[in-house]
Image (cartoon, rainbow, N blue to C red; front, side, top):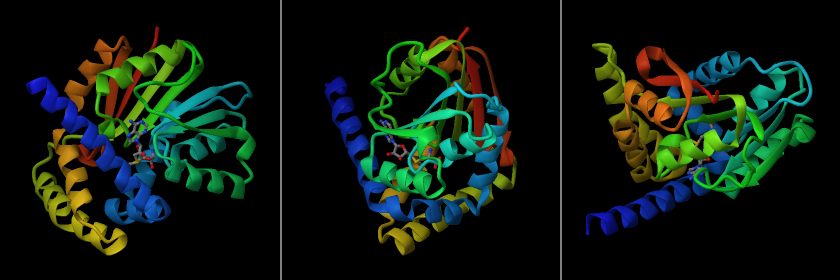
Length: 245
Ligand code: SAM
């Protein structure tokens, strides 16, 4: 049946994604710099600026698909080392790299690392002041389930922020971006990680992900209010914001 087919392909999707991140965990940060030409740093800084974590103890953030801790470490620094961030990822290899980075920077006490699935968060309702997810939601097989979990674990008044690749609608830039995605990214994947196929898959997954408007609609459907977004670099990335009122 169509339903049966969908289930198999989504299980495969998750295991393909898991395989990629297990293999590249150690080189993940380098890979990001090469594949985005360093732009991912600018987008991540902008995300944390928009979150504007307060400089007071007791602010709790859940960073889902947090990988090697890029967003979490920025949030802790932006809060003058006051915030507490739980980094959640389905992949233990990525978390291990994150934990090492946090310890090296003396931020171990501000962070904890939880290996779990974005679709089934192991926290009671209302546990967090903010939920962040950067370049992660696209990899989750059931996006609506992940969004309703996000809504559940936020406290009333809590903030949701999602940074993700999105739709480029600027002429010329869209062509350059296509050429980069389909030609350069798989080659970087092959050179750095020894394999280009998974990077073709990642590029495909960007194309399949809902555009800015449609993703905003999914957030509203999950219960979020005051949903807005900002485009970065002509829409290569978009940052969506919502509130649990
Ligand atoms: N947020 C980090 C960043 O921006 O650098 C890491 C992003 S990385 C592209 C995507 C991460 O999503 C990987 O670490 C992967 O293990 C994680 N991931 C994939 N599927 C997941 C799921 N179902 N639940 C939680 N994390 C997942």
